[in-house]
Length: 176
Image (cartoon, rainbow, N blue to C red; front, top):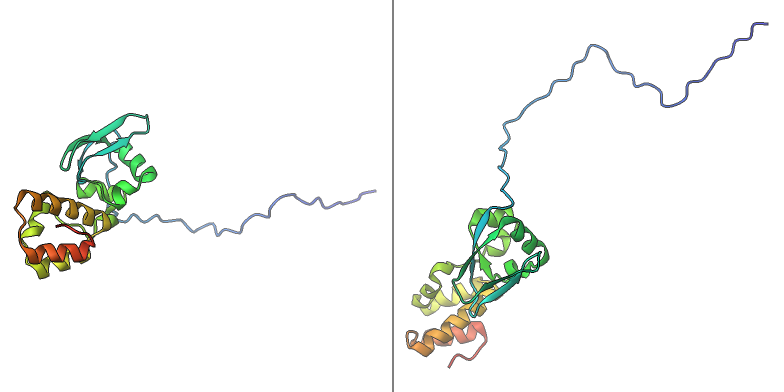
């Protein structure tokens, strides 16, 4: 007795691929961005009046005593700072090179930023220019400007009543 049994193959059926087609890989001229070294020391400047303290991922404290102080922080710590303590960048409390801010993906918080190197130059503007500038900056920057204005009024270098009036209106504080 010759019985023919058709055995069914288990699994997926084979894909029907034409045999004569070769796959061509196209290479595009993509700009490959060089990855930053995680241990690279980055210059980080405090832009807060009165100082600032940051606790690293290992529990060490980095202290900026006053406005303008600089500390060098490893890039991997800045990644940690950007992820865990985003307020350092949203306020902004610190500033560094623009390419580092882009790499950390926090550049958007610095869009309406003024020149922190010459923050006092804001007080040389006309009252109308001063008002426009104050309407465009972040909340953290407004606090810094308020602190700087208070210091300049105390030392006598800011004495224009019109400018002080504009500062009081825009900052919503009493300076005199």
